[in-house]
Image 1 (spheres, rainbow, N blue to C red):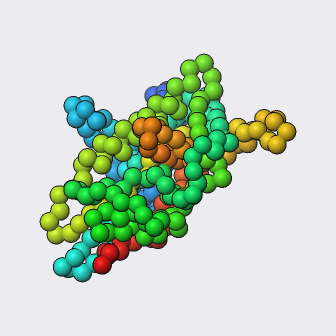
Image 2 (image 1 turned 45 degrees about the vertical axis):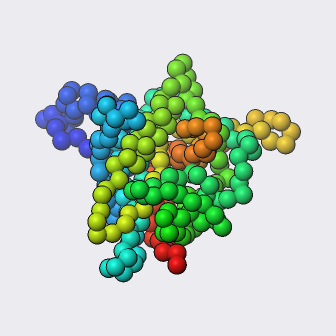
Image 3 (image 1 turned 45 degrees about the horizontal axis):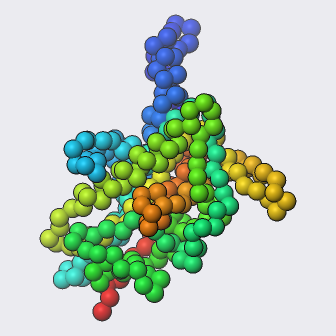
Length: 271
């Protein structure tokens, strides 16, 4: 909710405040503020307007919200930190709903987690075997119990914006994936402990979100929802990526899921 700080003698908002309020509703800034507050309420460290270098390393770009939680496990001689980073792009209401298309079964669901997240370690390589992700002898355990790292019945293969120029949803996904790549290159150099980072991309929109699928009779079924998981080969033909698309009315629930995920993930050092 936006609260006016300047009013006229009769208690009405000034023209300037009304102008700014209208502008905020059209942009993603008010969504940004609510998103940051929701993650802060779940005891995650929040950075607003975080800057990063793009893939070419030449252009400084901004990601709206970065919310981070940590799990530490190990002894002083073999310490390690698991860093769970939620990278969030926020979009205001454009006046047009977003539509998520369901029903594509091209992608295997054999592994609940697959590559719907990104795991990085400075100088390390990721190995996936026996249902676990291991980076240089450090296994990330509990992925199947983290709400934002598992498949959902509402897994979409495409999201688009209705209206004349359906570009906002595409740009939001492109921007959040660019930020994930940029953030991954900014892994800290630590000498006191090893750091493994799990990165979760999220797009929050003030636009209504509607799923579209066919029923058994071939009829179109539409349902207004509060979130979907967009899954596809969004970066490369061989890499399956997941991005959460969240309607801003559900951001508090998503932040609670983020907290649960941080609490359930741990690192285990393989013998």
